[in-house]
Image 1 (spheres, rainbow, N blue to C red):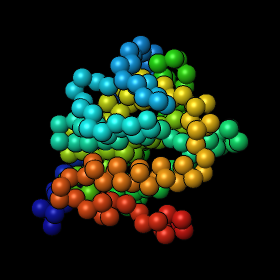
Image 2 (cartoon, one colour):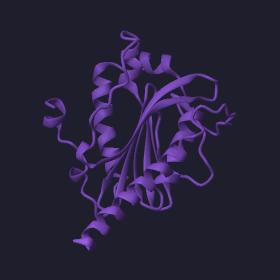
Image 3 (cartoon, rainbow, N blue to C red):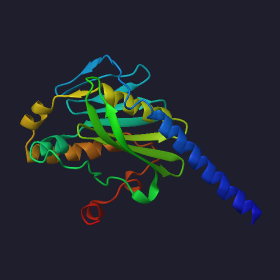
Length: 215
């Protein structure tokens, strides 16, 4: 019994330590920083840190690697288009991952390279020894897969890239119809599969479509 209690306490201590480390990765969210953008596409300009490698790029989605971890940066087309009609709409989680695996949540505001404030939501999910991260703002969405050693560093780089990215919202709103959004959502899921480890099963990480539509 004492042994089991010690294991439980050790697990709680580890979880608390990770939460504190993740909090520390976001302490600069409201700091004013001049970040020099060094990468460009049709709809956004962004800063790519020197320790990240771009695996795949496009006008709206980019896949990056950091050590053995991966993440995707997407333009949040739906939110940008909806904002034209419902500007006061609250930032809403799309329910992409299984909430029973959630271990960390942060809802706050970051200041971008132009001094503008953006609300954001950040979540981390634990699957055995793997971690999935989800960052959402009105302009951007990040999906990440990370090892235990990388999750904190990866989180800080997601924040840095969000702060240094400028999305040309007028061009996005003008260029995307409902059909284009549907095609884009399909590509989003296909891209997500590329960040998973070789022995990972993407279905183990996601909430199925029926459950997402019928919570």
